[in-house]
Image 1 (tube, rainbow, N blue to C red):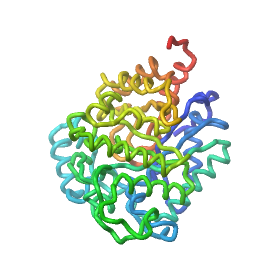
Image 2: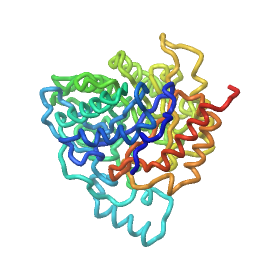
Image 3: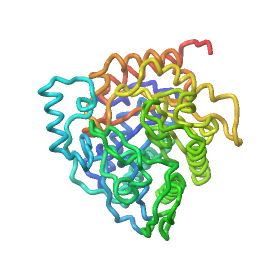
Length: 422
């Protein structure tokens, strides 16, 4: 791959660039410096000296945050996102791969989840522990500092069981993760319900060194534990993925009844996140639907958005209804112009879709229509967003190919320089 540093113009410094990165980029987890430097060199056209760059590091599915026992337990190991497609513990690679062969290669399927997911196999047999993870964070910060980049570093917390094994969600506290998700074409349980309660657990956690008392609200645990993890690793914040807090993924029809109790519990979760995170950052990935739909279907009260620092507007081709892209963006812009609890509206990040770090499809090749449609929507409305975000490595650990990057970067630069009527 060629180096983007040859280009003279970078994405405007006033626009935030939020890149998602996984450990798959490292040939060796314990020697991360070379790959960290290659990452910043490859994306030099997106964030150069003096620009604002946010990095959402996705070690796994966030289960390592929930199970984290504290700074005295940095030698604890945990599973990480080292799979081409993680099919879950119940299905396993042999069953998943046979289904994939039957439906996709022999059956000719080209659009549904098993095609998008691909076969299941391991990309690495290295183990990851918290001490090694701290070394990765340090390598990323060091490589950014050498290039004069003011790096904001977040860690990813996924509500569901995708990407790797979930010790906390699946084994330790399944009562707190009662929802289900389509993980690589297989229905798996283990999606956190922030309104649920936990059973007693004597195991020590970073935020609960004496264990969990019976009846602790799951959302309260998540908030306190996330803040403890961020503090201990010197991070700038947390990135809540896949409509975290809103049970029933991606479709209003999947949402549980929006009762008063559920609405109250969801609001409590976001309030607890803000309380525990204090001045640290909270980024949130939306449901693919506008704010009014999230309110009506999922009981996401409007005031919750003002507890967030940024919202990622999801445009991923495997799930998005193209007719919802513009309405979703406009609904986020509609949060502006007011304050709640002394906080203004969250920043809006427009998501582009090149590759997936956990599944094998490449959107700019496999669903080019949606890839180009994202460009059209950005040309019309993107200038109103505070930034852009995208997955920076594919499921094999490689960066996005330069041609697709440059095509998208040109759209962003053109939108920034064009006259607009707001």
